[in-house]
Structures are given as structure tokens and as C-alpha cells.
Image (cartoon, rainbow over all chains, first blue to last red; front, top):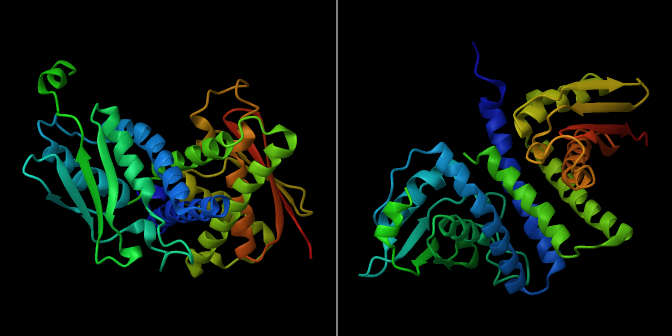
Length: 181
Length: 159
């Protein structure tokens, strides 16, 4: 029996392109509607947040992740399982502080910018992929973790890498987490 | 690879976002939002059309193009085929999807009938855009009698 139709490679590519192209159209539309880069960034983050709060359920249903006992375990799962599952990439992880609550995801490849060579003219502060920050923030909040998520570096702005910084804001309450099953 | 669900979530968020800016747009305002979504779908459809492998695109006649949309494009985009295709053989085609994925998450039946057009506008544009890249000028509208079944009407524009 041949594979189900929608799993054929040419269809999967179209499907992946669909998300990336739609995202591009969205950013273009927001740039038309808002003059200031900060406003576009803010809306991308807000939309990402909405997506993240629902995506996390989808993620937990598809993956068999075990309960995490530390922020670094959570970051590893985001980088190695979630990013892989939804975007087909595995960012590398660094920890930025001794308290192990500040981390960075370094994106070597970024499918969201596959069709973007450079930021539009006059949009030098645009965080093109800000949706991703919102998604991560929204998903974490659904599992009762507050975090600041921002782009620390962006290849589209001329930096050498694209780096997402995740700073956990509240101490993970282990006892509360265990009880929640 | 980017899961289909990412597109679905993004689409839902886009519909919510474009409406949230003007929660009570009134009849003129609503059209503006629908046409914005349709326009975005059109650009994406054009770009998708350009990326389709050339071998897929050897069409002998107009009906073949529509069949392609119903089978290959729909499977690639929505992981299922269109459920039926009808035509009057005079340039009008009705494509029916009995369980359209972008409507599935809403309750079935008549409850959210008013909301349904917002969830169809982007896809109408997508169809129109893909057809455009394939050399076919068209007008695409959609109608819903009861969720999640919907019909896309494609009217070919002869230049």
C-alpha cells in the first residue's frame, strides 16, 4: 500500500510552505496597518501568545514528555521536541546565568524566514519572527510558568545568529507541580 | 516539518485578530475585513502555485485544473480531498467539502453560521490565487448551509 496521500514529500513541502507563506502575508498586512515597528512586534507577540496557549495542548497530546523538574529540562524539551515537531529544526541551548533561570535558543536555521532575504525598507526594528516569542510565552504560561521571551539577536537585523532569550520569572514550585499531576 | 496544525492555529488567530480591531464593524467594515483575509489568501495561493512541481501541472483542459484543486491542492493543504465537484460545463464549478478542517473546530450545525464566512475568506483567496498562477482568472465565493460542510463556488472569468 502506498503512503497516505498527504504524507507524500511534495505535499508535506506544500504544507510547510503554506504556514511560512501565510505568516509572511500576515507580517506584510500588519506592516500596512501599523506604522511603528513596535506595534507590529507587539501584535505578533500577542497573536503568538494566543496560539501558544492552544498549541501546548496539541504538543502534550502528541509527545510523551515526562514531567520536568527544572527549567533546563523544560528548555531542552522546547528546543529538541517542540521545535523539531512543529518547525523541523533543533535550536541549540545555552544557559545564561548561574541561577539557571535564563536561557537562550540559538536558531541556526529558521524556516519562518525561508522566503525573506531582508527586512522591508524602513522596518529595521521589526522582529519578523516575534510570533515565536509569543508562542513560547503562551505555552509556558499554560503550564504555570511565567517567562519573558524576546529576540536577543536576529540574523535579519545583521546579527550573526538568531537568538531567542527565555527568562523564567517565578521560581518553579516543585511541591505545587507534583500535586497537580 | 511544520505541522498542519500550525497553519490552522495561525489562521484562527488571524481571523480573531482582524476582527478584534473593530469588534462591531457594521456591514461596510465587515466586508473590509473579509477582503483583507481574501487578499492574503490570494497572495499565498499565488506563491503556492509557483512552488508546485511542474510535472503536477500538465493540464489538458479547465476541468483538469479544478480536479487538481480538489485532489492534489486540497490534500496538500488540508490533508483530505474535496468531497465533491460539480460543474455546469460553462465555467461555473461548485466544490463541496463536507468536513472543512477550518470549520471543524466550531460546533457543527447552525450555531455559528454567522461566523463561518470569516473562516472561509482566506481559503477563497487561496483558491483564486492558485488558479491565477495556473493561468485561470476566477471569482471564488463560499457558502455554508450547516457547519462543517461548505461549498466553494468558482466562476471562471473569460478575459
